[in-house]
Length: 139
Image (cartoon, rainbow, N blue to C red):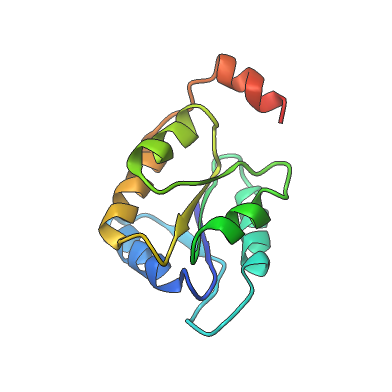
């Protein structure tokens, strides 16, 4: 399952991603926020993390203005590996080398088209394991 979370600054990009997922018949769970009204990103990062951790197959896509706040908040949970990415290559490597279970995006700087490409790569890239698994255990 794909878990979506945003604050007010990530809301519009999250809504664009939801349109993409709906068109592709991909089911998502949106834990908020639900408008552009000011809110606090840690609340939605926490709710998103709880949902991601309900099933090992779940992944999250969290969005705030820069992605920095969501990434910091999500990574406070020791079972979350949130990767703030701004291009397709880092979205791929976040999965391959870091087994990231949350992709964090910047709502104020990413265009929807690029964000969708990054999401597609993130969702279809497998973890390589091996030496990378050893490193993740050290986290």
